[in-house]
Image (cartoon, rainbow, N blue to C red; front, side, top):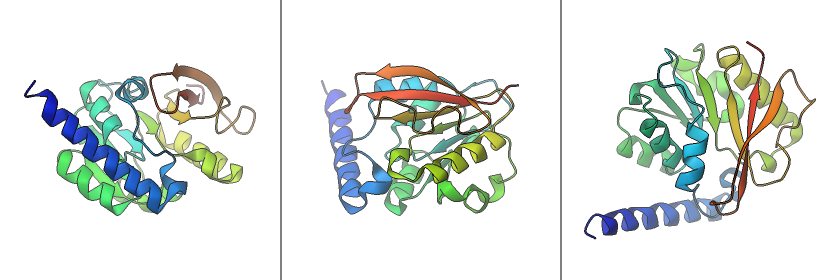
Length: 197
């Protein structure tokens, strides 16, 4: 019982921080509550702990997907987390000291990634609320991400809609459903994008 209370308090703090961020900027936050642990694990499942390449995480927010990537066995030094909101960046750096948390705009990866701009990534795990952005920006981001991951490796993206947020036939990639996560508020669909190896 003593270990449950600190976890519950930490979860409540994360929920409140996330809700305040949503109130301040709903377009870039996308939901009033953070991702569930079940969804975080499904998203992190695409990362290869044995890969020599780092994992690129977009929109880590309160860090639940970051935690799931670490639980999958990816070393902290192999995770690059790109977050837009300064208050989340500060908290993520405190909570995950070994992870390279970068503040920046995912729609401008060349400038935002800094020293990682030329890196090849094992995969990209995106918690960005893409449905809040124009289709042209979504397609350009997906093409940019796929240029940065190793050939054949995935970019995973969630959506609260029934269709992928970057639809099939709009770029040089395939799209397949990875999972439907009912244990999330709201329920989410996870989609994998990739180019042939």
